[in-house]
Image 1 (cartoon, rainbow, N blue to C red):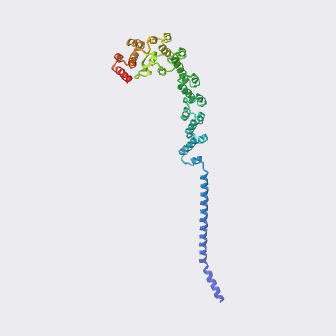
Image 2 (tube, rainbow, N blue to C red):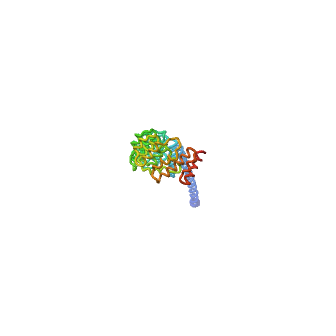
Image 3 (cartoon, helix red, strand yellow):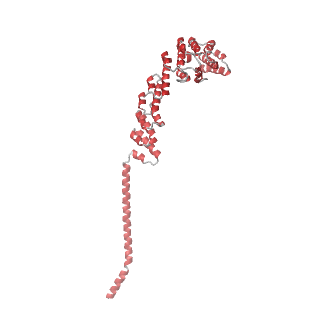
Length: 347
C-alpha cells in the first residue's frame, strides 16, 4: 500500500508541468491586464495635461505654434495691430516686422515708431511718408533719424504749403533739394506778392537754379502777364528752355509783364529786354491784335518765334472765341489746333 501511495505521488508529480503552464498563462494574462490599465492611465493623464495646456494658451502662443514662418509672422502682426501692442511687433524678426511697425506708427500717430525699422530700407521711408500730410505738423520731420528722409519730409511740407514757409527749406540737409525749395519760395512770393525783392534773391546764372520750365509751372499767371505758349496744350513747358535766362531774370521778366512795370526790364538782358518791354505795354484781359503778337514774339530767337506766334494765336482764339486768329497760324496742324481750341472752350 505504501508503494502504491508513493507511485501515486510519483504520478501526481508527473502531472505538475501542465498545471504550471496554465498558471503561467494566467499570470501573463494578469500582467497584460495590468499593463493595459497602466497605458490607459498614462493616456488619460496625457490628455488631461494637453487639455490644461490648451486651456492656458495665449493668442501669442497660438500664433507662435504655427509652423510656417510667413503665416506665423502674419498672425503675430495682425494680433499686434488688433491689440495696438508694439512689443509684439518688435518681437517679429527682421523685415517681417516692418509692416507691423508701420501700422502701429500710423495707428498711434507716432512717427517715432518708424525708427524701429531699418533706416536704409524703403519700408522706413514709407513709414515716415504716412505723416507727410497737412494734418500733421512738420516737427515730426525732426524725429527722423535718416537725414535723406528728413530732407524729403521737410520738402514735402514746404510743397504742401506752396513753398510759403522758408523755415522748412532751412531744415533740409540735402543742398540741391534745399536750393530748389528756397528758389521756389522766392519765385512764388515775387509773383504772388508782386515784390521784386524776392527776384533779387534768386540765382542770376542760367546754369544754376531751377530749370525755367519748372518755374513757369509754379506760376498761375502766364509768362509776361499775357497768354504766351505754356498755356497751350500742344506744347510742353520745356520748350521755354530756349530763353537761356537765369531764374532771377525770368522772375523780373514775368513780374514786369504782370505789373506793367517797365523799370523791371532793366534787370533783363539781351534780346529778352525787348520782349520784357513789349509785355509791359500789352493790355491784360483784352484781345491782342495780330501785330501786337508779332511784336512780342518777334523778340525771341527766330527758331522759336513761330512757336510763340502760333500758341499765342491759339490762346487768344480760345479765350475770346474768335476764329479770326486761326487764319494767321503758320500751318495746317496749328490751324486745326486753333479751331479745336475754340470748339472745346465753347462746349
